[in-house]
Length: 283
Length: 316
Image 1 (cartoon, helix red, strand yellow):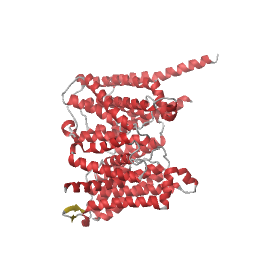
Image 2: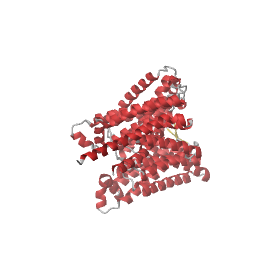
Image 3: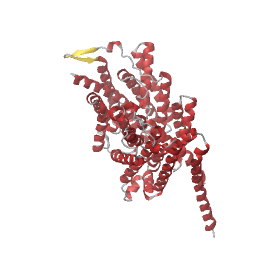
Image 4: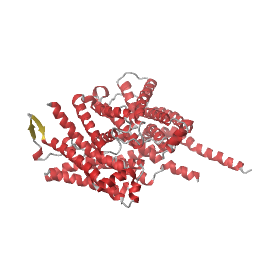
C-alpha cells in the first residue's frame, strides 16, 4: 500500500521533471542553446501562480498566468539574447546572469518566503480504487505529464513543424538553405519550452512549493535527467525523468540521509557504462 | 646590425613585464602597514578566492573545460578543516593541508574519471551535479557534517591574528602562483593549450589527450581546495554554501573580468568581484541583481577581460 503511494509520488515528480527537462532538451538539441535560467522560470511560475491563485482564488487563473508569463520571458530571451549568442560558454554565462537576476526579483517580490500554490477544490480530494486511496491531484499531474509527452511526440513525429524541428536538429544550415526561416521555428520552440517550464512550475509548486533555491534544485535534477537520457531525444528525457523520479522519491522514503546518493548513483553508473546517455546518439 | 636594437627592445619589454610583478608584490606586502583592517580583509578574501579562480582558469582558459561545479574542491578543502580542526582531532596546519590535498586529489580523480568521459556542455552539467551531490550530502548528513549549520569552532593555525594570517596566505599564494606559472609555461601547459585549440590534432600527434585533461582536472581541484581550506580557517566555519553554484559563479566572473587565459587576470578579476560585492552590499540589498547584470554586461561588451585587452594593446 505504502509502496503504491510512493510509486505515485515518484511518477508525479517524474512528470514535473519531464515537463521541465523536455524543454531544456529541445533547446539544447535543436538550437544548441544551453539555458540554465530554465529552472528560474520554474521558480517564477511557482511564485506567480501562488500570488495569482491567492488574488483571484482560481487555480486555472494561476496556471494560465504562470504559463503565459514564462512563455513571454522565454520568447523575449530568444529574441533579445540567444539569437546573438551562439557560443555555449557565452550562453552559460548569460543565463547564469539571469539566474542571479530572477533570484533577486523573487527575493524582492516574495521576500524569500516558502509558498504553496493551492490545488483546485475539485482535485484536492482523493479517490478510492480497490481499497487504496489516491490523491486526485497527483493522478492529474501524472495525466498531464503523459498527455504532454504524447503531444510532444505527435508534434515531433507527425506534423510538418515537427519534421522541420527534426531536420533542424540534424542540419540547421541545410534547412535554411531550403528556404525555411529557422529563426521562427527557434522562437516557437523557445516559447513552447518556456510555457512547459511555467506549467511545470505551477504544478510543482502545488506539490513541492515555491522557494528561493527551487530554481537551482530543479535545474540540477533536470540536468541530471538530460545527462542520463542522452543528447537530444525526447524519449531520453522521458526515461531519465522516470528513473530520477523513482530514485529521488524512493531514496528519500527509505534512506533519507543519503537520498541524493540514489540520484547521483544512478547517474554515475550510467555515465560509467554509457557516456552518451541511455538513449543518446553516439556521435 | 639590425638585430641588436630589436634585442634590446625585447629585453626592455621583458623588464617592463617583470616590473608589475614586483610592484604588485611590494603593494601586497605593505598593505597591512598603511591601510585599514577593512582593506586588508578584502585583500585576504581576494587572495583566497584567487586560488579558486586561477585553478578555474587553468581548466577554462587553458584546457577549454568549463567545470561548472568547481566549488566541489573549495568545499572539500573547507570541510577537511571543519572535520579535523573544528572537531578537535588535530591542530597541526601542515597535517590538515596534507590531508586536504590527499582527499581532494582522490575525489577529483574519481569525479574526473566520470566527468571526462563526456564533452562540452555535458562536462559542465556533470561537474555541476557533483558539487550539488556534495552540497546536499553535507546538508543531510547532520550527525557528521553539522547539516545546514556547518562545522564551527575552527581556530586559525599557529593562533595567528588577522595581519599575520594575511602574510601566511600571501606566502602560500605567491608559491602557488609561481607553481601555476611554471606549469602553464611547461610542456604540460602547452599540450593543454593545444587540446583547447584542436583536440583531434593533438590526438593525431600521438598524445593521450585524456590523461592531460585528467591531470589538469585533479591539479585544479587541489589548487582550489587550498583556497577553501584557507577560507575555512579565516572565517572559522565550513558551511554547505561552500559547495554552492554561487561560489563557482564567483570564480567564473573573476576569471572573465580579469581575462581568461592570462595568468594574472583571474587574480585581478577576483579583486574586482570581491571589492564590488562588498561595496554594493553596503548600499543595497540587490547585489544579486547587480552581479547578474555584471555577467550579462561582461559577456556582451567585455569578452576578453582586463588583461586580455591589455595584452592585445601590448602586442600592437
